[in-house]
Length: 107
Length: 107
Image 1 (cartoon, rainbow over the protein chains, first blue to last red):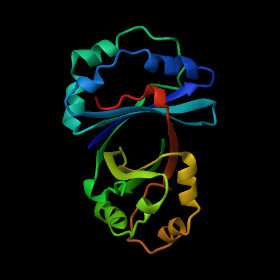
Image 2 (cartoon, rainbow over the protein chains, first blue to last red; image 1 turned 180 degrees about the vertical axis):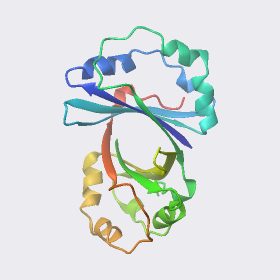
Image 3 (cartoon, chains in turn green, purple; image 1 turned 60 degrees about the horizontal axis):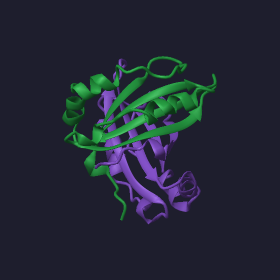
């Protein structure tokens, strides 16, 4: 499995605007081969007053994820107008491969 | 849902020793109420030659996760001797809450 995370530091006060960007999008993710699930995660506020969010998309393979990033649907979703949000900086991407032999599933 | 991640920066050459720590442990995680799944994730090497790993544990709630951190099993698992691994620094913990209304499940 492959987990694609993007970390966003959102200025306190802009949480609703940020969440609205994700709530209002017309996602076709579930139509893509290899897509498993998407979650938006919210964590702590940092010492400068920015809240850490992370998009968390699970794909069967890195190749499936990369296929989606090259799709017209991906390009369209990154083009449309968005509510104004103040960020600390650009999103920080991390792509993770699962080490299958170290997994512990639910019993 | 609650996702507990710990980020580890492991010096190149110590990957096997690090993975062995996790492979050889006697985990009782699956016996805990609220445990969903555990994965060890591996990402890129940073510019200083350290490889980013992240433990990725899913729990039904933050409270379930915190219950486990107070258990004897947690304390025991953090006490036993481990192979030598060089890290860039201490593990960096992030606890994430899922925003359920922004989730996209597999169709």
